[in-house]
Length: 265
Figure 1 (cartoon, helix red, strand yellow):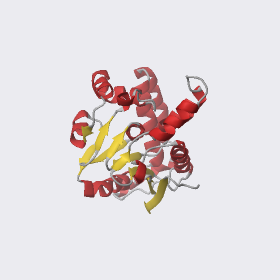
Figure 2 (spheres, one colour):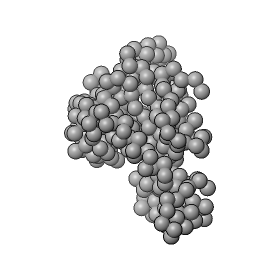
Figure 3 (tube, one colour):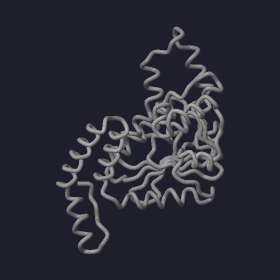
Figure 4 (cartoon, one colour):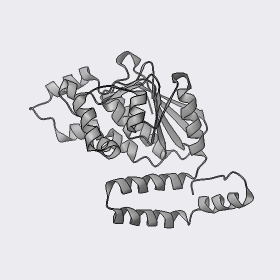
């Protein structure tokens, strides 16, 4: 896998840090960046060694969202006034790919996170923000809307009233304001950001990977479906997990008062 706009690092066993690496463009996403993001997510999905994924950015931005120069060229050179659906789907479907990752994903938000940048962060399971971070949905300021499935995620996360306030207002939030709204999990001093993200990753990678994956699937089902359907999904997942080696290891380790050694089987 060749990466030019991203850096792939494995600071310790089981943890991958993917860094957006277009500092001169505030880590904005163009088509190549999105292809690399999708390729990296697919690589994490297929590698059983990797237990936790962390996203962060280089320099003073997590990501400024879509690369406006590239976006403008492709929009205005496309035939007709409406872009082909397939182009739009390929452009904006990367967060769904992240959300279907059955391993925990952490956004370590080091600076500005707007547009597609904050939408990618919404697809992560945890969002740790530097106290220097600024977050917002600014698309309306240039005549667009959140289109990487950010609208539905934002409404589910904060409710319709707050979602309208953020999307229609188009204002930037401080990290503390984002925390008070429930948009981020935690705010930490800038110098401690990656230390905090790695500490969380360390905690998560020690848990049973199948259980974490099933828990994510069940929680997403609960958010997206009726209570009956969510409860059925939960019961099926639990029935599956109770037949796994990891469950037996977890019970045995509890009895023996030791740390479990989960294998993901």
